[in-house]
Amino acid sequence: MKNKKILTALLFASPLSLMAQENAKSIINSFLDDWLLPIFVLFVLAGAIHGIISNASLIQDKNEDGTVWKGFGNVGKIILFYLLAFAILAGIAAAANAAISSIRID
Image 1 (cartoon, helix red, strand yellow):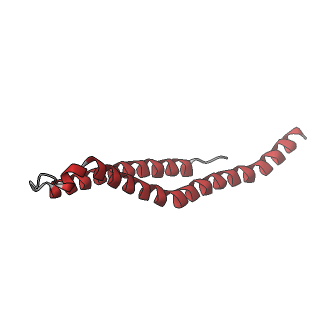
Image 2 (cartoon, rainbow, N blue to C red; image 1 turned 120 degrees about the horizontal axis):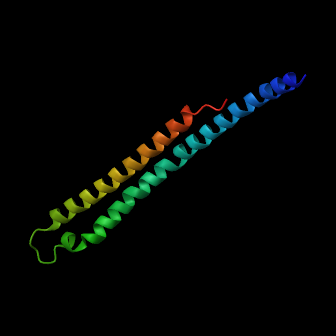
Image 3 (cartoon, rainbow, N blue to C red; image 1 turned 90 degrees about the vertical axis):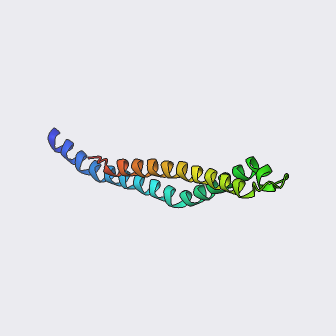
């Protein structure tokens, strides 16, 4: 009789654990879908603002010695570094999502 109760409890608990796993995956996927693009845009804007502020004197070319393109080149490099940082963070998020997807709760 005791074994029958344990077996019944396990049968009822199994679908609940599968539902919890699917719920966790859907929460993570919705987070990635809903928030990844705005975070990407913020990273690009932050890179552009940081680059323009830090290279303002080169972009303005106050001494007229032809440093405008050097200033814009520096801004481009800074934006690329921000994009690289974002790509690394997105890779970490994708790896975490894959690790969570591979976990089986039985």
